[in-house]
Image (cartoon, rainbow, N blue to C red; front, side, top):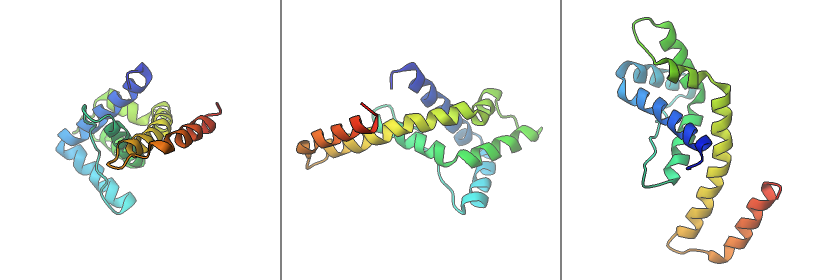
Amino acid sequence: MKLQWSANIINDSKQIIKYFKTHNIPSAILKWHQIASYSTQISLKYPVKTRWGSAAISLNSIATNHLVLQLASVELINNRNINIPEDISDTIESDDFWRDVELLLSVLDELVVGISMFESDTPKLALFYQWFRQQMNSNGM
């Protein structure tokens, strides 16, 4: 997570989440679009510093809400009474941001599975080699 590329993605995601969690009207607009698009509300989850796996949970919440974040952003941009910061709307509208979120998630999700398996109350260390080989093969190494 200390790579600048991944840190930038996490920081951009945190800005989006913080904006919608700390502004009532944008939050209500986002929830309206969630109900209209998904028939349910899907919360944005802020990552926790002490649990690195929470970065994956946070990015998954951003990725799940991709469509409604874009819809809410467009509505907020078009509404002259509510201000969405330009850097946040630019990030939400950026195809590069969404591609990078998916790329980072493809790595983090696999690491979360592996680490969860090894940190459980009944660790299965014998499975480490199999899991590691699978990761190496899936990345073409």
